Each structure stands twice: as structure tokens, then as C-alpha cells.
Image (cartoon, rainbow, N blue to C red; front, top):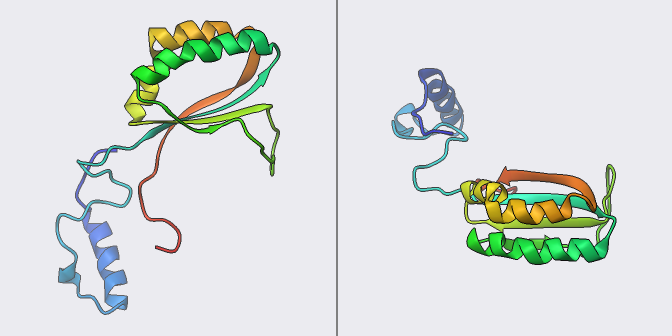
Length: 144
């Protein structure tokens, strides 16, 4: 999302909220980014969230060995790699992975890289699953 200044209606809305808290309308500076707008210096991390059912562990282990080259090239870091889990809602798969990348662009580039696509060809015949590539969030957290 590109940076943009607040529209007049957004500025008025914020001024009304600020007034309710005893803050004057002139206390809202002109350069306040719109809610959800990315800052020019912010780099959103990228993530792969993968859920797989593996039918042949031996062949799948070759995929795991082959994908290491692409992951190293694009700065990947495993956040979740297997481990115990609970399917609190919906369906489960036997293998769950979350991989962090330095940026969303790096996550996308890794997936489309020749190195990863070569590894993926090893995985495809022996595993079924879901893989999404998603940007991280660096905004306010509950309780902040």
C-alpha cells in the first residue's frame, strides 16, 4: 500500500475523536499517514505458511535437502517446522511449517526461483498441501 496523506473526511473524523479526548483539531499534523498506510522506511517481512500431507517420506526428504539452497539464498528462517500441534478449527495436515523471509518480495522471489522450483518438482508427486505467501504485520498489538 502506498503512502498517502489523510483525506479531509478522515482528518475531520480524527479531529472529532481527538476532541472527545480533549485534544484540539490542530494537534493532528498534516503528515499523519492514513490508517494502514505503510511508511517509507518499513519493510514488511514475508512468510510462507505451508501445510502438507506427505505420502513418501524418503522422496520428501530429498525435497527438504534440495530446498535448502533456495532458502539460504533468500534469507529464509524457520519459525515453525513440524512439531506438536492441535487443529483447534478446520482440517489438519500432517506437516506444518512457517518460514520467515526478510521481506514479502524475498518470499515471493524464493518461491518463483529456479532453485525452489527444482526442489518443488521433487515434492509434488509425494505431497499434497497448501502454501500461502503472506506479508507480516508490524502495527499496534492488543494491549498497546
